[in-house]
Image 1: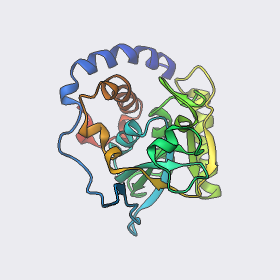
Image 2: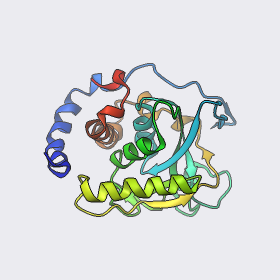
Image 3: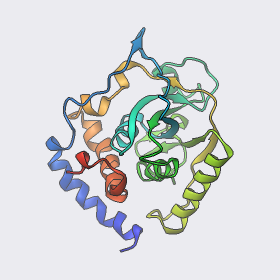
Image 4: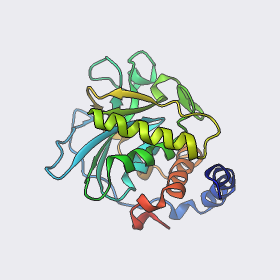
Length: 228
């Protein structure tokens, strides 16, 4: 079955899954994150870890998507892609900071590669939509894949070309490729929001379908404990 046909058949499955959502979110599995003055502190990666950054709409869903992948050790929600230093959620939401809601992913490259992370990213949101994701509209919700080296840039291009050729989307991928500069962590209230507020109507209506879609298309990259 083609990926595009899978995407069409996936929508009814989401409706059914939402009815069973009480079992969808792992309770109590929250990250241990340090904070100061209401903002999460950005940890340095361990020697065995690498770091990657992606922006794909609301970071509540993207953080959960990345957390459920095998080999991912930690995911921080924050802001990147703009010029304003130390922005707040309200500043980014206002659209004048230039930043997009972004996640910083700490992963073990021996378990999951940058290419595999990137592939999961493109299935965790709609990369064909400009300046928004579903009901969330604005530059702060745009799709960005950040790269730290020429090799990472080439890897992102490779995955984008693959998605355009064989992926489920009827429109071309419009994700920005941006050289990584700086990542600002979000407020502590936004960390693990998906798990802390599983009955929030927005989480159930908007975020859960994104997580389920990613798990459907790249189930082989998901930690088995999240495959219900």
